[in-house]
Amino acid sequence: MSKSLKSALLLIAAGAVSTSANAHIGTELHNHSSFMTGLLHPLGGLDHLLAMLAVGIWSAVSARRAGPALLWGPLAFANMLVLGALMGLQGMGGAVVEPLVAASVLALGLLVLTRQGMNAVASMALVGGFAVFHGLAHGTELAATGNAWAAVAGMFATTIALHLTGVALGWTLRAAPAWTTRATGAAVAVSGMALLLKLA
Image 1 (cartoon, rainbow, N blue to C red):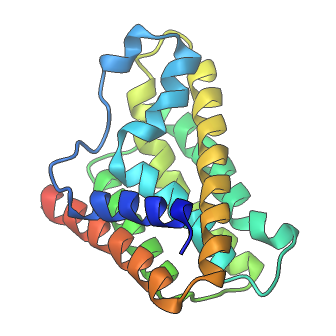
Image 2 (image 1 turned 90 degrees about the vertical axis):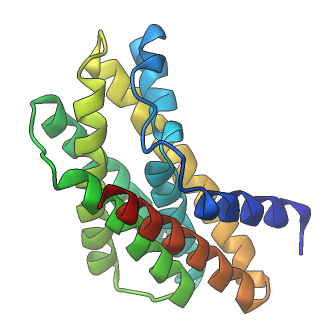
């Protein structure tokens, strides 16, 4: 197994056993510019970080072959995330958002674990639906920044970067023993379950 793959798996596994991590970074980043706040925001919550990586991983491990189809799911997630964030900036959302965000991490982990493929429309609808709730959570928190549009732009950039990282990791997992994909998916799913239990 390559060193980079081992490092990535250790990172995901560490997240899976960490039940004390904060779901979001909160207000400490509001000392930065709005764009930088948005850029760093997805990195501050285990739920968002794992979901965005898992979307990319799942896109790669469930694909029949390399090609543009690898990016359909990530692009759907990123764009629907922005839509959800804009809704969150308008005060939409509610108590159900955080449990659905955690549930999406659990579901994405199970999809990685099983390498369950779907047609393009179904996969885009699924991850896009998850992304709306992630966006609602982000938008609600980013509403306090000085320039919400700049914050959303930064969040979008980081989301794309995390998806591409996930795709690269997923493509590496395709060539690795099957247990590595199962272990990665299980680690993400356990993290999602831990987050759900923490919210209960």
